[in-house]
Structures are given as C-alpha cells and as structure tokens.
Amino acid sequence: MNSFFRGTIILIVAAFFSECIEFFVNMILARELREAGMGLYMSILPVVIMVMVIASLELPISISKFIAENNRSLHYNFLQHALNLAVFVMLAITGVTVLLLSFPAVLSGFHPYVKWLLIGLIPIAAISSIAKGYFIGVQQMGKIATSNFIRKVFQFGVLLSIFHFFEYEQEKALLVALSALIGSELIVFLYLISLFIIHIQIMKNSPHTLMSGKQARQKLLAVSLPTVGLRIFHAVTNAIQPFLIHFVLIAAGFGAVAATEHFGMLTGVAMTIGFFPAFIAHSLMIMLIPNVSDAYARKDFEKLRYLLQQSMLFTMCYGIPAVLIMYIFAEPLTALFFSSTAAAFYLKLMWPYFFFHFLVIPMQAYLIGLGLVKDALLHSVWSHVISFSVMFALGSQPSLNMAGIIVGMNAGIVLLTMLHYLTICRKIGFTLLLTKPKENFYT
Image (cartoon, rainbow, N blue to C red; front, side, top):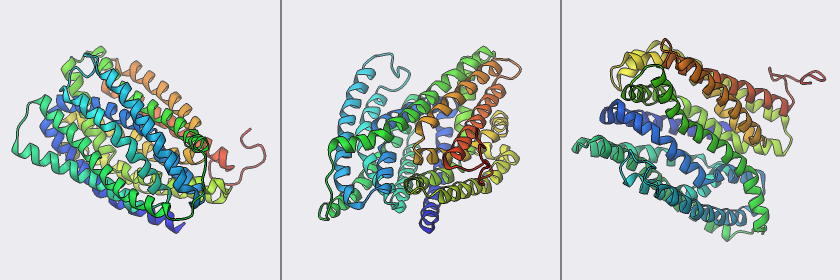
C-alpha cells in the first residue's frame, strides 16, 4: 500500500508542475492565436490525440497490466514480442495515414506541413508506448513523471522563445504551436527509449522464460483492442464535438466566426482552467491500473475495496475545493487568457462536468484493471448518446445556445460516472457504500 501512495505522490508532484507549465502554454497560445486561432487549434488537437491512440495501440496499458501480474522472468521475451507488434502497427498506420492525408480536402484549412507532423508522430507514439508500459508496470513512476515534466518544459520553452522573437500570421502560428507539441513528444521518446534500452540489456543478461509470439499477442490484444476501441471512441467523439457545437451554435443564430470564437473560449479557456486539477486524477489512474490488476489477479477483494474507497475519497478532497475556487474566481481566472465575460460564464456552468471527470478518470483505470474495458466502452457510448442529444436539443435554442450545450455535457458525464461506479461495485462484490451486500442485493 505504501508503494501505491508513494508512486501516486511522485506523479502528482511532477504533474502539478507540468500542469502549471501547461497553463502558461495555453496562455501563450490564447494570446498569439486569439479566439479564432485557438478554436482551430482545439479543433485539430483531437485529431492529433486520435493518431497517438491508434499508433500506440494502447500498449502502455496492456504491457503494464502484464508486467504487474506476471513473474519477472517473462518480461524480456514478452517485451520483444510487444516491440514487434508495435513496429507492425506503426508501418500499417503510417501507410493508411499517408493515403488518407493525400486527399486535398483533408486538413485543407491548415498549413500543408501539418500533415507531415501527423505522419512523423506515428513512429514516436508507437515505439515510446513500449517503454511507458514497462515503467508503469514495474511502478518506476519517477521516470514517467520526469518524462511528462520534460514534455511540458520543452513545449513551453519553444513557444516562449519563438513567439517572443518572431511574429506570424495565424496559419503559421498554428503550425508553430503544433510543431512544439509534437516536438515535445519526440523529446520524451528519446528520454524513455534511452532508459528502456538500459533495462532491456539488464533483463537480457538475467534468466528469462520464453513465451510464444502468439501467446504474447493474445495477452496484449486482449487488453489493447478493447482499450483502443474505448480511446478511439473518445477520440472520435472529441473530434466530432467541435463540429457539432459549431453546427448547433449556427442553428441557434450565431455567425460562423462567432461560433468558432465561442468554441475557442469554451475549450481553450474554460476547459483549460477546469481541467487543471485533472493531473491528480491521471496520476491516480496510472497507479491504479497495475495495483488493481495485481489485486484482482490474487482475488484480494478487500484491497480492491480499499483502493476504490481511498481513490474516491482523495478525489473529493481535492475536487470539491477545486470547483468551488473555479466558480468563485471565474472572472479573474479567465482574464488571465483574455477578457471575456462569456468564458467566465461557461466556466461557472461547467463545474459538474469537471468534478465528475475527476471521479471518472480513476474509475476508468479500475475498470481496465478488472478487465471490464468493454463495459467502459458501452458506458461511454450511452453517455455520449445522451450528451449529444441534449446538446443538440437545448443548444439549438436561441435563448440557451452555449448554456444548452454545457447542460448536455454535464448530463453525459454524470451518467458516465454513475454507470462506472455501479459496475465496479457489482464486480468486486460491495454495495454502493462499499459495505458487504445482503444476499441478492444486485438482483
């Protein structure tokens, strides 16, 4: 239990400083790109994330789960097979991406070099996923924390230097912003791979047990494919959401430029501020996956209950004060980006969206550790169906517009949280209050 909290604290401290830097990064982007440019940046960001998710095949999760559950002697050969799978996926995804990006209509509103940045991101994401999964599985969280911090420092340094000495039109400024983002992933790749090679050499010279490539691929894909399905679904819905919001706002009477600007204020300002404390939730998520996997493999349900109870309690201890601060100080917080009463109003309305997201993130890790990724995907489908339906129904009303969209977002995340929590309690055999159930409690 001590290693769990020690690893979590290491990740939280490093993530806190990383998020502080990320906050300044978004301030720079908001001031350089302005409302319309920020809207375009936030529109393409889900595409970048989707490319990373597909290229990595969510191998960090499946690798960390296997490493946590199995004997050390199996690690070397398993990682060899994982690397072979990553290379195959990298080549396949690169070919498909080059074909898709060859169509002139794809990313037509962006600088031509953006397509090459996306292609270059594929091998970086595919290969670094092996190292990430290994270090998470052996719970060497210091290396993961350091890599995340390096990423943010590099991105901030590049943006600050370039925008301080040069001025660009919107299209080139957007290219610089995306180049800094993907360049930071390259730096992390070089850092993790160099450390991973050292560990591989040590494992190579130690006694190790062979396993077949087929068996290793089955172990990897049993976790990776459902998890990739979940992440792709999230990435696709995140990619659709900007266009849905844009369409709904136009239906509510907004002009095309105004719709883009308000979307930029929602995602680039309100959501940047609101998701600032989410680094704690992501730190919990990274730690929970191997610990829950290990406890469930040993059928230690008391530890599973304890981990769930502590992670939820910890989330409430920081989540409630965080949303209160956002609500009370919405105006001065949004003014750090640019003066906008609309952005402050959006931030106030979205407090349920942020708070329940803080709860959902560790619960999603719990579902992965319990082997319930398919359930997590089904929950996400239902929550997005409800969310998008409410966003369209209310957001298209001229009297509600963006307020109606935010109500839909809030409704979706509350439903997702309830579905996740109920499923976890049923799986580990406890009531919603985490006590032993009476007979036939769930029937």
